[in-house]
Length: 137
Image 1 (spheres, rainbow, N blue to C red):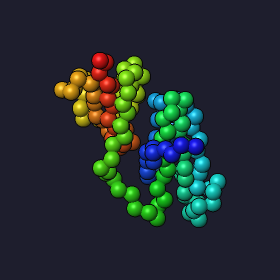
Image 2: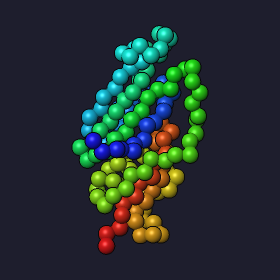
Image 3: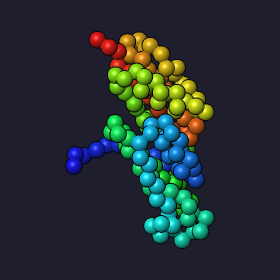
């Protein structure tokens, strides 16, 4: 198996909703495991929180996520953005449309000075995204 580098997103109490949202945007197969299933928390309030979720698409996208336990700190902001790029404008436009629903657009998805189509947004779960369609030619 090849080595993979993929985003692992941390949430506070809404990992299930976030991962189901990403599943609706990207498709693929979503697996989710709770704290209770793996006996990783003594707090009954955390039983249904996600200990681990994995979204894998037929096109090779992998996105993972989990709820942060109540006993651990979670930063509200990050210096990380998830970047999607490629040549399939229809596919990437669809991802942009899905991710921007309920989110905040920082840079509209449009022709950029370097010739590509590019946009930046923060989705409704607070995750920053960059989407870039490589210009033909």
